Length: 251
Image 1 (cartoon, rainbow, N blue to C red):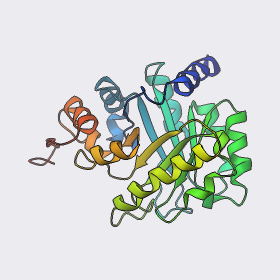
Image 2 (cartoon, rainbow, N blue to C red; image 1 turned 90 degrees about the vertical axis):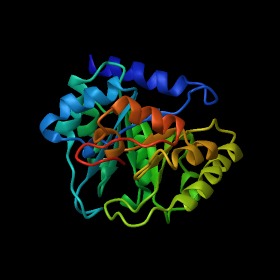
Image 3 (cartoon, rainbow, N blue to C red; image 1 turned 90 degrees about the horizontal axis):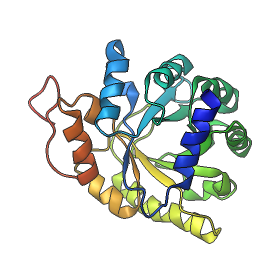
């Protein structure tokens, strides 16, 4: 049963002790080989990825397009019951898209505050559906946008890049923003949220992100293009080292 499975996963994510939950690797399936998506996603889960990140881009809110709810539905059907589907909607009017991704099997749905003038209402629609809600902060988005919704937001996604545009990495800005996010929650007397960092996370920067307080790392090609996915996941969790990538001599 879809709702029962989601309820169990949401409960497990919500009840995890913030001081003991460790680092979670959530590889972006947009970087997988879509001709072998089921095989590649299963290999990533088998290598130690507890979450799968589904970055939905509509070509309007961001210039690129990716995929929609049918891919999420296929992943839900094909992945182990415990695998958390972490969906980020980089779309306009995300409140209109929430129902289809709930029906597809999403466990966490994240939106951008800039994507709608009524982002608190969208957050409310997500949690009313039984999913956990996330808010994505672009490099220029201040942590203060969390103030109206922090009590309902379980996952804060800090973007290392401007989504859909690429360009330079805003690592220093993200490292400064992590404590700002934690301060928002602390000032409201709320427990620490999951803090995810998205946008080309590599083993070289993972340790500094972990020290700052991030506990979810979104890495796409670093996992899906690695010849040894277990080694790639371990490198992200532990930091350092090089990972051999398919089609090249190394990473």
